[in-house]
Amino acid sequence: MGRPFSSLGARGAIIACAVIVVAAGLALHFAGRSAICPCGTVKLWHGVVQSDENSQQLSDWYSLSHVIHGLLFYAIGWAVFRRWSVAARLTLAVLVEAGWEVLENSPIIIDRYRAVTMAWGYAGDSILNSLSDIGCMAIGFWLARVLPWRASVALGIALELIALAAIRDNLTLNVLMLVWPVEAIRVWQAG
Image 1 (cartoon, one colour):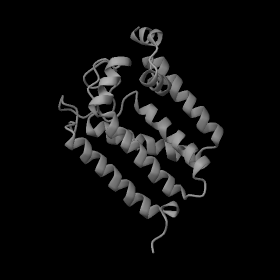
Image 2 (cartoon, rainbow, N blue to C red):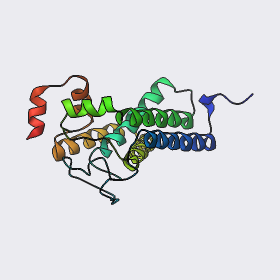
Image 3 (spheres, rainbow, N blue to C red):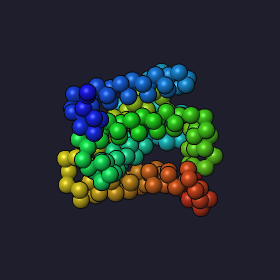
Image 4 (cartoon, one colour):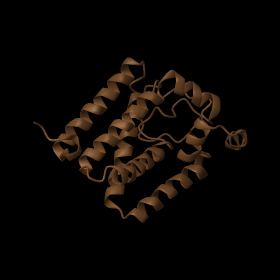
């Protein structure tokens, strides 16, 4: 009988994560998402939130939120699944992040973003952006693994403050506005 998932090794995790990422990409493709920006170009960075290229390129301001996802997933995995191998915890984090990317690009979540967040014209992510977001989460997970916990907390706070200063949005406000919209925040975000 095979080893339990909780003791998954590095090789198994690499294979499992690759399968999860490919499955997410296929799910997004079959859901009608564009592989790349409909503009036809691929850029490393796009920093204009209220534009047709937001969430279409390899990275954007919301990539910072996905790094924070990785920091949080590492902390939750350490607290709840401490006996699991790090590889198994990473695989679970990739599965959760990939699931979120598929859900985030469903009509119900896209419509919710348009209705209650600052992303009024949001049309969903390109597949490239979604897969990059999964990669950003994995980077955050790795950083949390190698940094002292205080440095991970400081990094998470710094990334939140940078996004807040740059675009008047961040992971905290994004979650708040999706779950419990506050009109005063929406007005402030609109500038």
